[in-house]
Length: 193
Image 1 (cartoon, rainbow, N blue to C red):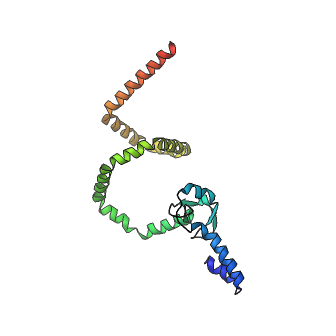
Image 2 (cartoon, rainbow, N blue to C red; image 1 turned 30 degrees about the vertical axis):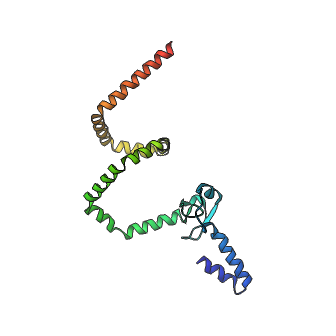
Image 3 (cartoon, helix red, strand yellow; image 1 turned 180 degrees about the vertical axis):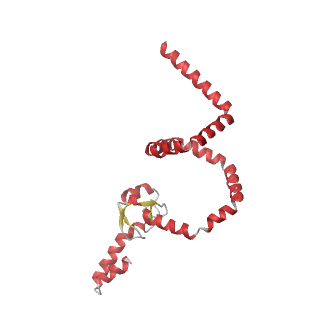
């Protein structure tokens, strides 16, 4: 649509047509070419981009990341992407029915995947522990009200989960508490001397 409007505005004059085509190429040259080695450098240099869905110029923060594009950003902005996802979900409601019917099969597959990839998941979590802790801390800071409402609404469920966890891991918890008390006692003794 944008291409047609730009070319129609230029009329029959060939020089105007070349200028219009150069203008279009300049707007979209960000998405042409191979994927660079370091996407972070490219996304930092791309300040604005035109969405292929709504054809509006938007800032780079308005696009999701996409490592296969030269710009490191998706062609469609976040707003258009959400609209597309919603349309897709509404047109594929039979997937929810499938999940209800094949609930046991899906659960069995998920359990099998969990068991076969347990070591990889553990290694990934260990390597990125700091990142997960920071994310959790940041989330709790920004969602204090929602978490408080959730805790108030689900007090009994939370208490039951904590009770079950304690019963299941009693030895581990007791050993941790014993080591903690011993460490604190040693710290107090070192401070007093």
